[in-house]
Figure 1 (cartoon, rainbow, N blue to C red):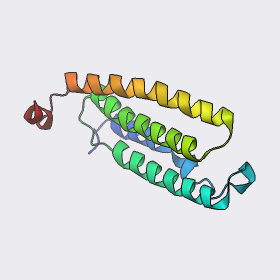
Figure 2 (figure 1 turned 90 degrees about the horizontal axis):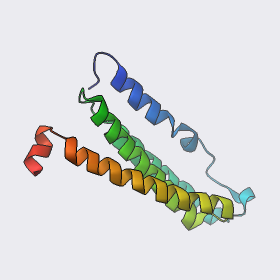
Figure 3 (figure 1 turned 120 degrees about the vertical axis):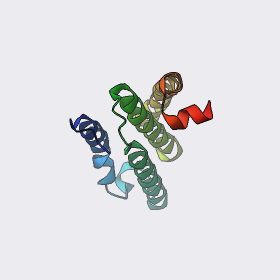
Length: 131
């Protein structure tokens, strides 16, 4: 799965570590102005988004560092957008809601860029079948 050099492992490990703090966050946030039910719904949504992102970031490295980076970051950015949408649905702090809107805008631009780059540069057998 990983190249002998270990660089692929480092990429995936670094990307996975970015979500550890979220996975360990407490499930309720009553002290932050949300109801217990709202906090439980948000915690469940965060957990699902985090699990999906980590699953999608666990790429099989190809030996092409650029492609592996693009695929890992694509999953990471999609996870950031998912988390920002959860903030907009459940959050109440206007600073955090504003940040979430900014995250969605910025990450979506980068998602679009990554998807274009992958489509232009992917020469794997699976991508050749789709072309």
